[in-house]
Image 1 (cartoon, chains in turn purple, brown):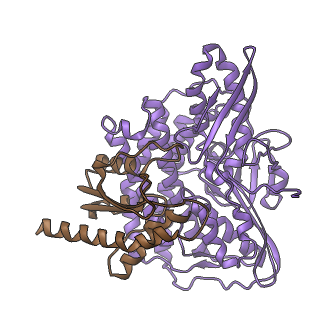
Image 2 (image 1 turned 180 degrees about the horizontal axis):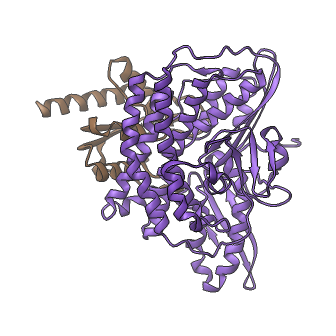
Length: 426
Length: 137
């Protein structure tokens, strides 16, 4: 059975399930988005060009790519941005979480559960829901426009700081937009907590997420694993173990020999005690519904995170306004030879950027590991488990549930397309 | 992506002429953030309708039937605009000014046929705007 072009995911992928004598012999999540060789493109470019280039990896989540890149470069140069820049970066990441989760929950995932082929078909009956989703996405995009000059592929993010700092009135405007969007975030939790998540995919899982420190967030210097381990992000290679697989242009990852999951479900399960406000209150009642064995409940975790992100973004704006915005917050960056790893939580999970730079600040090596690439092996594992259990309902009925499963990961296939090194060319 | 940059080339010419143009890149998000301000939307982009490369098309969105793409990458432009119109009740009218691409591939250059068509597309947008202004008056 082959699902050509999984619908309503970002990018081009297909699911291939080989069934022989009534048994599932092989499962492949094929990712055939053309590799864009971004890591190779970066080699030879100056450090200050990097954030603008890596933004192009993805139009859904250019912001985490930019923030991970500048964090990595600053570490390589041995400098650290000041509080204001770090706080603006947090706001930029929150904006991306809001915009991306809104898009996925309301426009890509919800049609599955309401029985429509796509968002357009459901707008007549569920106009309020679609409008709420668009309003939420709009709030996220509005923050990006103010912070980075554009809602997609922003252009003010540099190592050391932002080339333009928002004005107090711009931030006040954003606070109003965010307040209006809260209704949509809360509605998302209500909708996704009222759904019945099928249990065909339930199985043991391993989760990874950044340790955000004292409060729930999307940046960190350590990675938490559900087996209780904690690793510095510099050891990302040891815990992601990427290998190229022939059927996919995204590499596959494993931890201690097993596939693992990153993303909203991993974050909420590993950092649940750090949530606060409305999201924490809502989670209290919903905790039993967030099933660590069932990746389909990732959607509910995304909804809870959206409530948190809206509330936290308002709080961050208030902190910035209270302290007063300095227009010259940029930290001087002096290039020097070195290596740095930056990690952030993108909407779909942990994102690593690693750069080696020469004395002048020119990139000599770049390594980018995206969440969808990390999740690819995990998705295959669950496709196999699910296909084996669902086979009894008939081969022809496998397609819908398996697509539902893959979509729950919110895979961003376009950005998982990642350089595969060729060992030898004749 | 080669001739997919046709819209941006037209936008840059219109900006030089003093028009306020919103460059959307690969997402219509900037349209949604400004939705209340938009009465009439003109989308300028590379459009493949099988014509001679460099041909310029002006059409109302309602008269355009977009072929279901071979891939399912996100939503089609026309679908997103329909969704926005149904959800927000606007924009009132949507036009598409399209340039037939010659090649869509990894490149930062427009092909000569599309480069030559940029000025024609700029003129079409200006004509359309003038007509809409007249209609209003």
